[in-house]
Length: 508
Image (cartoon, rainbow, N blue to C red; front, side, top):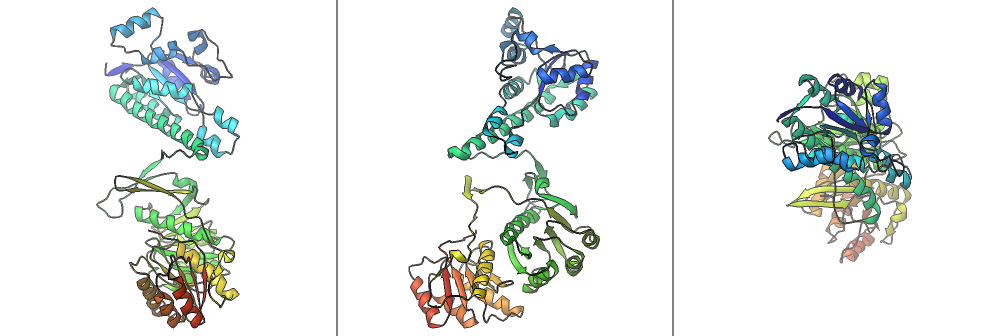
């Protein structure tokens, strides 16, 4: 039958929250309830009668609770086909009762891993009986309703209330789909836990939280975000984040993470920094970042690694920007910044997790490690006769950090605490350098004494020649070109210091 009255239920859950209304409804409709252990006691405390699973199976819970429901009378009651004469005959022969509703909430495997528990505790949170019950009930959705998560209790309550204790075939198929989503997600996290050590070449990704976005990169493209945004940010103001906002926010928080222990501010457009600065205060850092490109800052994404106070808020309030990210905001700052209702304010609660990156490509997916290499002075190998001064070394570290997070081909020009300009995403490194020089001049920066960072080696000496004539006095680059010596020779002949890192930072 398409619509079926629920006459019997098996309930075995880890979390009992919000289960009370379900028990009340089952009790109201005289549903026979089977249950185990703590769940049985919880149901009985609600005033409902319960038949212990042990009474049905004639077996106790054994092996420390590892085996409770794994029995033909349980799985037979779930799996036998109500419209199959052979199944009906065997159910009668072996005294197997029909089970019309299965409610399971699995052991919290993900939460246990995240808590830093021991491997022994983690292994015990791999649910066996529960996951088997879910799959069995979902397979037989024509006859059985499966509720596979506490997140579905309210939905079941609504349907049973509206339909006088019954479910439709459409209901059961829907809950079956939800059940397989729960079981596949659960198995994915278990596999990924084991695969941290085993490194089996298989990609398993599962995100259960989905949010529809207004649209994708363009209005004609649909888009969703899959993930737990609330774990990373509290949104304190503004409209919903768009696809493009999210892409820029990701770039912003990755960049600002490079400047731990310093007061840093960055302004990004289309994932590239148009302004980055260090200063004693957030206000001063913002001013210097804004000065690097007062045109591109319009409509940008702003980020800092320090609390935004009233002085900083008042300074940036006149700028139109899409998003501001900070670890915190003072109440006075929020009073200022929330004056524009669409302005998105994000309080960042944690660093970005994970060490892998995934991208769809062609008819498949590519995965790689995140670029977690950040060069310090200790990683510099001086390639020229002249070594960079202490101030130049600081500037080279600063420029290299920005370069790492900028689209290739890229060139960064800066001093030790302010981005002067960048040439980004060019098909030629020479073009990237020329773009950076022209941009620096356009915003009034004197490049005499500035430094240059390149994301990859110089195949010819043309870049150092152009940079030297513009006033650049120190350069950082990975090195590795068969013609490195030509660039080194030019630097030696013209008093430019060059260091090599041996680490390329392509970013496509």
